Length: 152
Picture 1: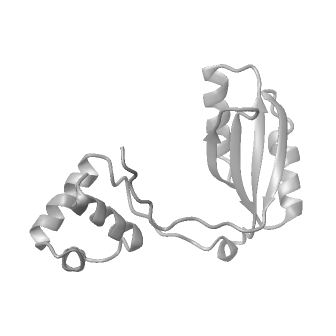
Picture 2 (picture 1 turned 180 degrees about the vertical axis):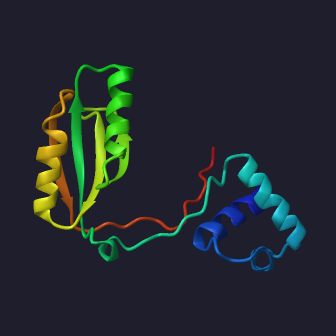
């Protein structure tokens, strides 16, 4: 990626709804060049999609938590099965397969703490492969709107 590609990615992360003409004007390049560059970034898998960011409170999901989960036996089949199960739950936002003391971090968003307890008891504690889990309620969540490339 060169400087123009990086600028395109940065600007689209900032506002993916802007027109190609506006994006080109912001970057000081021709609209045809801009369109060609954006298409190339999509084809190369740099840009993987566009989405709307939503307010979890507006969706009645103001309580977020990270669930640290350990599973056994450790096998590809068990890992893939649990990952598919977890991401299929309506309360789950993200599933991370991690190294270290835990095997998964599961990010959930629910209406209230009692619902979180129900998820833990009804959806995780009864799973044969789950040997341990802990929950950490998220008080505040901050994320970057724009992810910049790092030097190799």
